[in-house]
Image 1 (cartoon, rainbow, N blue to C red):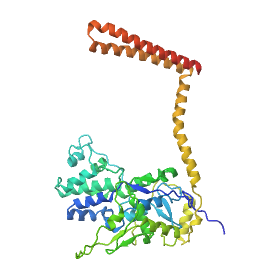
Image 2 (image 1 turned 180 degrees about the vertical axis):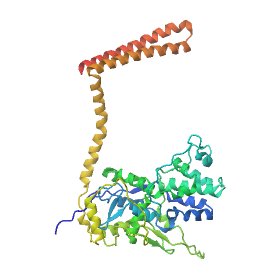
Image 3 (image 1 turned 60 degrees about the horizontal axis):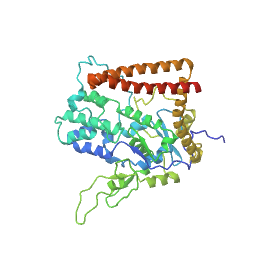
Image 4 (image 1 turned 135 degrees about the horizontal axis):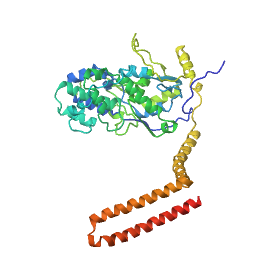
Length: 453
């Protein structure tokens, strides 16, 4: 039987870097704060909008930075710009714009061309209508505006909530996200804002951030990724349902996990409700958790069911949807693997070969450090070489002469302002003499340097 050609691993089997976490800039507590700041009817409106799924934070376990790190270093190397394949329990799992749309419920249509304004100079910035004289507005400030009823009308409150959602959940790029000005101008028309394909735009941010990281970057202790990083975990949970574990009210769950900077452990959230003797609590909504240790065991044992490509949520779901990219690349090995998946082929982890070994990774790090030092040394040598070339040398000397003249002129002007007329000439002569000697020394040293080279 001919050997099956499959995409190679990013890191060799058994040599995957053991880091601490994928650092997500989105904080679950920020989403909770947005939800808590809204009136019931406002929350209902947003829950029924394109943002409904990403606001339903209790439907899935909180993001695990440790699990994210485990997954991200098990990438397969494919020749695709907007498609990723992760290896789990010996099976490939696809993350593309289609899977992103399935787990987030966001609009992932083509991004429309930007409309040209009729009179852009006459049109006032919408920012001033929402945030007044603020030069920038953090998401935390926007939430405070909602909590303290600084904004009272329903439409404006929903607009500010939408801006907080896009800035802190879909496009976070720091741990203290700010409202994105471009989104403010787009939200003049709320219906147009909600109809915008935020899913494709957010996925593009996520994909670009992942693609921008090489093996050295992915092997760091903490890997910071921009965009809606939680989508990676949501796709893995949909592909491997056994990873999603239910937390019952009678059990305490302690999860050892390293979360994103400033984020609390999921174990605290899972076990925060403890029955007090003699106290009857009302029934609570089901909670879920993802335990990284269990997930890693499931991956190594290869006994769990894995869905390599997610099914459509329902019949005719994809009718009329276009998840393509005009500049996507081709990959024959990947196309063959997709064909095998469609035929129900049974994969084994030893079939996926290649990848960077720990020794090669160490060597790459050393080479990178040397390259980081080379440019400075090389630039210095190139600069000396340029100065020592005939015509360039005279140009450099002329530049020195021009600088001398400008220095003398500047000194004259300064002394006219600072020194009394009687002592002006004496001070000026003394200082000019000192400056002249310094410039002569510079000329002499440059001349020697030119002769040597």
